[in-house]
Amino acid sequence: MGDDIDLQRIAEDERIARELASGDLRLAYDDTAEVPDLPPPGAPVNVIRPLRIPHDLDVQVRELAEQRGVTISVMLRELIVAGLQDVTARQSDPLAELRHLGAAVQRVADTLALREQRDAA
Image (cartoon, rainbow, N blue to C red):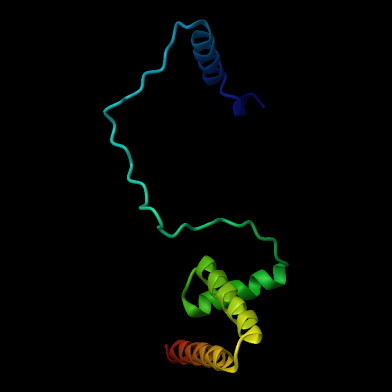
C-alpha cells in the first residue's frame, strides 16, 4: 500500500496549497504567449455524443468499419447519415427515394468491391 502513495508529492502539493492560501505564492501569467487560432465563424463543429449500444451491434459496426477501412467514428457517422436519408426519403417525393436507393446500391457495390480486393490479396 505504501508503494502506491507518493508521500513526497503529497507534501509538496500541500506546501504549495498553503503558500497560495497565505498569499506567499502567486501565479504568474505569460501575456506574451501566442493565442491559439479559433475556427472562423460558421465553421463546422463536431459534437461528441456518448452512445450506449448492445455489444453485438458494436461488434457489427467494428467489423463493417474494418471492412471499409474507416474508423468506427466515420462508420457511425455514415450509418447515421444513411438512416436520416432513409427517413427523409420515406417522407419525401419518389425522386428522392430513387436517389436514396441509388446510394444504397452504390454502398453495396463498394462493399462487394472491397471484399473482392480483400479476397484477392
